[in-house]
Length: 220
Image (cartoon, rainbow, N blue to C red):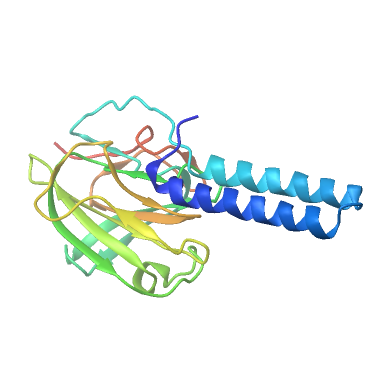
């Protein structure tokens, strides 16, 4: 299993914590065999959870300028028409993907093009499904314009557990569809804003895969 670079520090800290905890248990409770085995099992479980959270599976990206790829693994929790007020300032179709702690947390570009807008917003850590999380939580906003002049905007949104958003892009970057643009630690959501008239290929509560699931088809 390949581990994502964002996990190196967390995994090292997890190993250090487990080693210290087990050393303390061995020192102060040398005869408590059952108790020690419970701690050993819980320690192993914690290590496996952290390890799988930062997994980075290899995937094959099938690029298509008309297609909008899902930016993250998770479940579709919102499909609705909204007013995008930060950059596009027009009506859009919003699709929101909720990422649970067991999902792969790599974020991928939904389309190829030029990054026309990027902004990081410090904020709160409301639960990811809270109605105000998209405007009040810590988040990034990224807009990519493709070669046809179509702009797709998307946001990484932190949640109650996700306390760190990582991004790898800036304004002016030329990016490829399916390429990693960031990572969100320990669960949250990604919102994507598509032009009206875009053909939506997913439904509410559908399980989707980042870089694999085709969320929508843009107009020619």
